[in-house]
Image 1 (cartoon, rainbow, N blue to C red):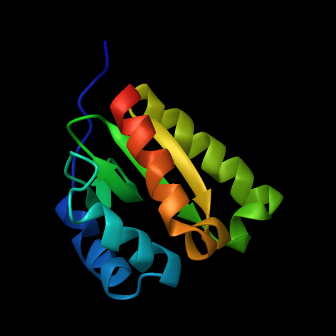
Image 2: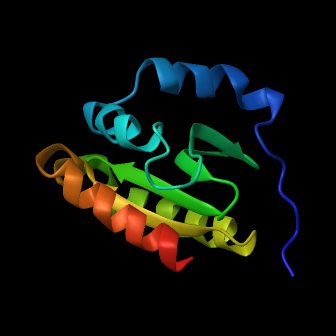
Image 3: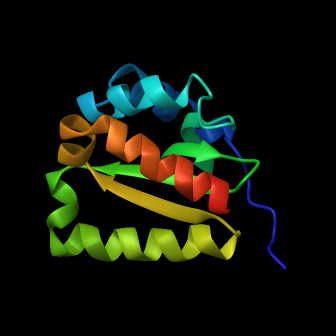
Length: 121
């Protein structure tokens, strides 16, 4: 059984707002697909779970989508991502990760992959 994490804490409210207002091109492009609910579920962007802010979250299906830039290729950041993923998974979340270039170069394919994942979970 999973514990219930703190969702969208007020402590992170300003940071979440800042991330929404300064989203990457890839995040903005993917949000255009996710916000229309074409995948059959509602996604939230820059969503707070405990002390983390995830790019996109479907609460109903407990799915997190992360869009990673080049900084995520650095070893230190990979280690932090791994720890973060372990914590989020401990709350029952499933995580899909995409690289910025995947979203920017083929957003339709990324949306299809997300749709398939949503349907399977």
